[in-house]
Image (tube, rainbow, N blue to C red; front, side):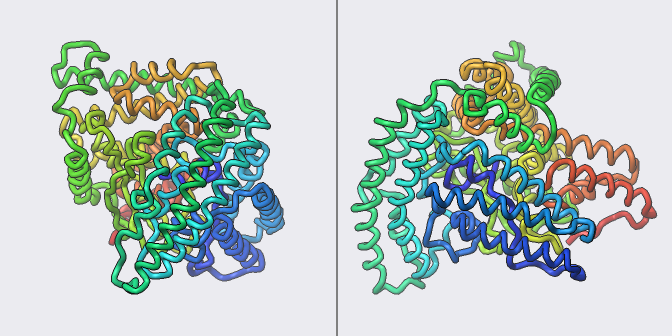
Length: 601
């Protein structure tokens, strides 16, 4: 999965995709294309101004001294600006655009329409989850450069403004209580510990960490001044603000959080879940259809697991095999350090095999980092953080080192293929290199495409010769099963009355993942309805298109060309990807055989 921005996950994931002011070379301009690209440029700049954390993640430091304004007035103004943007886009004559710009238009329109439609559900009334929010604002420091004096001054400015953001968050939460729009209490019970983690001595505060070490570019004469100012701001303003927030949360908010888990119990709950299912899968599939797809996939993968169990000679039942995989010491590292080294080793093992399945290797590098210790207990096994769009920061594969005794080694290969290469890192890094594409196409992230690609990438390990160990193959099947189970339990909990315990048990019955992971996953699906549906739906579509291309091209099919073709669009709705691959197949069939091989670099 992709690491969410630091504000509410629900809000962060619906930001309109924006174009870049630093637009690449374009084809000959017409009045319609000029208007379209001016619109893209203006919307990109608006997005950077309105969501400074997003700008920071993209490597744009112009707004590194501020947070997103989460006042009610600012939220309403942003919603109005999105509605105005939609009207402006519709006023541009699509028929007068080139084929490439019609694609740009359609993708942007798809996302902007849904962003405006989503306004009715007032997700801002739930501005934090157990996976992120103002209580984990310190994590933003991980992507900031801290190379110059200005970088430190910007962080100080953000620290000075943080109490206001905490206050705005509290106001939104109070509005949510009044509207009956609150998260499930079972998830909110995780939050007090996250807030309490901010109530420490200044020198131990994660907000203070950048001031413990300075680069040479920061003059020695300024360092003590910066440290003193940081200590004062954190000690006198930031920590007291979190202390007040903790009191509000425990006394006023947690008792009013809803006792149910289903999205159907939110205001306009049925419409809300139907919207989310369509948004995250980029399809018209209903919850019932998705549930049935999940049940069929669970049965299919279960059969493949039985074959691996027989291959390794395990004589017990599948449940006993799962328990063996969850508990036998041979599958676990003893320390976080050992676990981290193992992840690094797997990444290096994958790298040289990539040429077997791609002709084009992206230029942007990636690295492996541990998930911050404060959030590790409440988050997933791993996630990917994209690199800066200007190339100034590499992509990073974050791995969870909390409790090594629940992190089995058999899952590490599939996980690394998904989150690092050739999964999310290839998808994001290749998109940044798309020729002549506006930057919203280079940086867009549609769940079904992006996570579908990540799950598809796990299976590329077979093409790369990386699943020679049957337990690694079991790990791949476990991860495939994990995403199939999601279709069943997400729809089950949010539309069919499944309890949290029933969902956990179903997951445990069909997957060898450890209970620690399963509980965190189920809680993620509760807090982020519909998001988890995109993975398996996207993977199935990408695999279906590969089979279609292979059948149509026969001996002329090359998986390297197909994989390059999938990544050639950047992240798009699945229907757009399907049209692109169908056109690619037709072009290949019409091209003489000797000319079909693409050139790599």
